[in-house]
Image 1 (cartoon, rainbow, N blue to C red):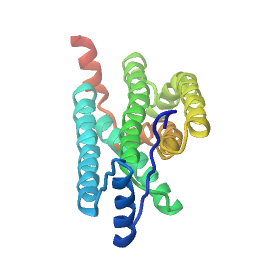
Image 2: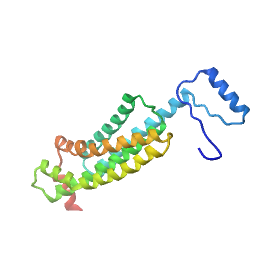
Image 3: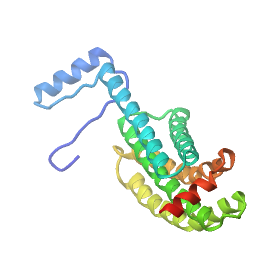
Amino acid sequence: MSESSWSVYLSGEIHSDWRDQIMGHCAQAGLPVEFVGPKVSGELIRAGTLAIVLAVVAMLIYIWFRFEWQFSVGAVVALVHDVALTIGLFSIAGLEFNLSIIAAILTIVGYSMNDTVVVYDRVRENLRKFRRMELTELLNLSINDTLSRTTMTSLTTMLALLSLFFFGGEVIRGFTAAMIWGVVVGTYSSIFVAAPLLLILGVDREGISADATTS
């Protein structure tokens, strides 16, 4: 919306007679009208869902090549955790799920992966440095080493998102709401889901040490 133009958005199911009347009045006034039917909307949702799946697969391949397979599995579980909780929030709250929410989920995937990579990178570094340390203690040390960075990044991001949520207008409110929730669960999962999964999956200390020696 600006001083010379404005837009009206109608979502949900609209009776055909009402739709025809609205389009007729707008045509008489020379106003453009765009109608997105359920078929087009369904195609957009499917395309967005495919984008989320491809993003997760791409992250899996990236982590697999950069770290060991245990790190890759842990990162993907954390990503699925974040996506599932975000979709679950909108489902339970009965909020509209549209393309802006899918864009927010893709952004959450990238944000969460960035946090997870920071923690995993410190874990790998400490595995090379403290070869005799128990894995539980080493993970705790690695998380504490990156905790201040993760917390400050999340807080500064949250301040920007809260400003957009309260002052950015109704159009982007759903996007910012999903992002606020995603920052919370993404920060949580990188610390309490991705890292502890390495204890369950086990880590090849010899392989990491060998990589350090050859490099």
